[in-house]
Image (cartoon, rainbow, N blue to C red; front, top):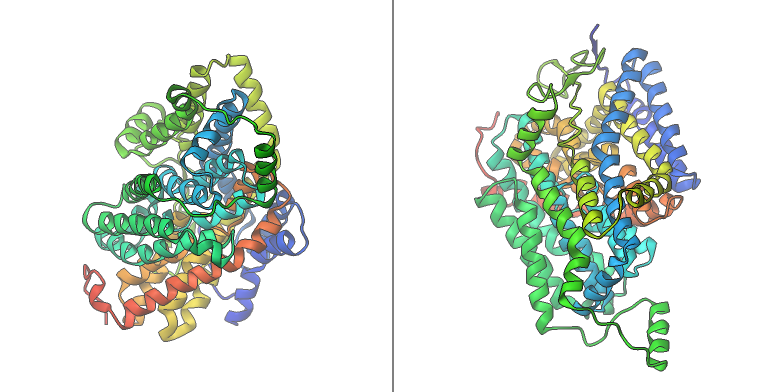
Length: 560
């Protein structure tokens, strides 16, 4: 049985677009407007998607149900498993008392919360995004900042904003690889073009991040550090994307910016140390009581950081294609074939014009890569760290059980949201929403960034957004005589700004910072940041399209 997607069931594009948006409107409306718990919002959104897919877009019920199950299974293995394992490692460091030492070591670098935010959320988070992606940096850096003493709300919301500039090359360049696969365009040109868009925003985001937490005056007080972070990161990102490869862009940029900032802070500190109001009172009270500040030896500090060093090593190893391929072939029978074909769904759904040039069957393969999954690497890192810190297996099992129980509602929410995303993908509702942006004519370069933004907001993944809309961007660009290289790169670059508002990332952030139930408040806070940053990407793309086209890599003969 095969079924071809329908993109205008009402024969009025605006009405079809409105119905296609209903699942997202229900999900985000309940979350932000009515403050319903996230897992219930996700269930409601998924049910709405299935009903619209079957009764409006004509998708066979069996295909709709299977696509939901496929998305849920994908979410459990690829997303939920990473978050649970990362929080498990954090819980181990707390249980063993090592996190207290880590807090003091970071405070030794700088007690200023603005600078700690840049180091952990932006620099360290970028490294983790480059190595693992798929929500890992939000989970790890969010939990880390909570341990340092940040307010849970700030730890969640600010990490969501920080996890933007590095996303296009996350998980060892996976989004760029996917974009190349679906568009057939040269990977070097796509990576280079993304590397000529996002570095401009990478200079802005650190400033934006600090300003989201403090006033204008307090932001300018640390402007030298912000410039060091932004310029070192953006410069490395530009260089690596244009002259090296698409695999290690963010890992290199994250490491360079972290090292550059640490060196800079050895010679420069702000005149005023910024702390939260209650912390300032606390610090004054401790000073009045003449409390002795604890000092730890280098060995104690190294031991405390050991779990996160092990985690970084494991996620880097798990992201290397050679390592992943070797483990996959040894443990997953269907690894070479790209996974097992999902019954009823594989090749059963056809995408049609104008989304693709000719009818194309959608793949549906599930690679149950239990060992090569990034979450497994995080979990093994946690077990090794726990063993080296002296925890017995029984104690680690107890901590893991507590972690899973604490995150139970977030697990349901993330799974259902991935199920929702897959229903919208296979039913064609995502394409209907994307097609609405293609009606903008000469403004398409600006709104093209919002197509990618929408894709990430729907699926929670820049990779998935590139798979969904990469072909659409290429096709529309050719029709409008705009560079397909530019517009396909724009899909990925604009998509990263939607990462902070996708419900999946918000659930990861709230789970990692123990704020389940506050998803709506966080969404309302980050939404306009997301829209504004996507608009900045749109303006940059407009400039490339109409003012500086000579800077677009010319790896393809345009179709006139």
